Length: 292
Image 1 (cartoon, rainbow, N blue to C red):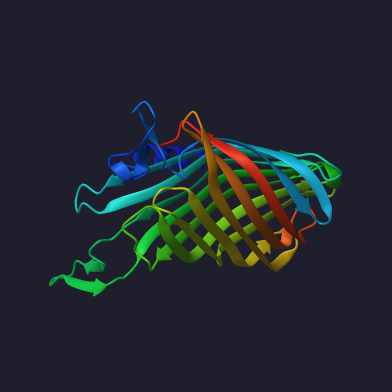
Image 2 (image 1 turned 120 degrees about the vertical axis):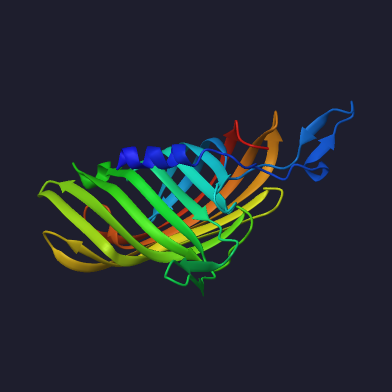
């Protein structure tokens, strides 16, 4: 699975321009007449940040880091663009009474924008069927969660694959809304032993985002809900959703500093005991080496 993710990342190397609009609206002049950027790409850069985390009436301080890559390319056959977002090596650790950490090796979406909006059926007389959707592959590999306060053990989502349809069909990487079935596999290890959970496309996933043209604002939301099969415990329903808002508040040496607000809710799927819980966060992060 990890090799598949790396192959997808290499296959989507940028062949079309990415980042913020390349025009005078994104460039300003200082007193000496030197140009500097005033637009930034929310989906690109090495991210380091800290935030306050509130969960189940417990407050903690957390640190986060990760690599975000936004890329795209055009289909050689039809010229239809791809809009791709990759997040690599995402790590968050928090202290306090309920200290723990999460680590994600890869989390990404690959969206094919279909300019024609139809499906070709290659019969004896080729037929075109209207298909007013973009197609998105949502892939996550190696998501590890360790909660020290729960005792020895960990949860590992080995892989998750979503096949999403996007009715908005935006001609930009800054607007998207995909929904569709998702399949995945997770392992939980606790004092009682090891348990496996699978979801063979029995869950529904959505992923949405809206970014301003200058990249100063970004709103994202995602979630999934459906039935998972616990090999040791049988069929059960679970749900997850999270939403995040970002605002660039200043830039230091052309590197944006971002205010982040986010919240999440998990139903019967949090931690080793598959409990329900909510989380709220507020913090600051800096994105360096990103497109601008």
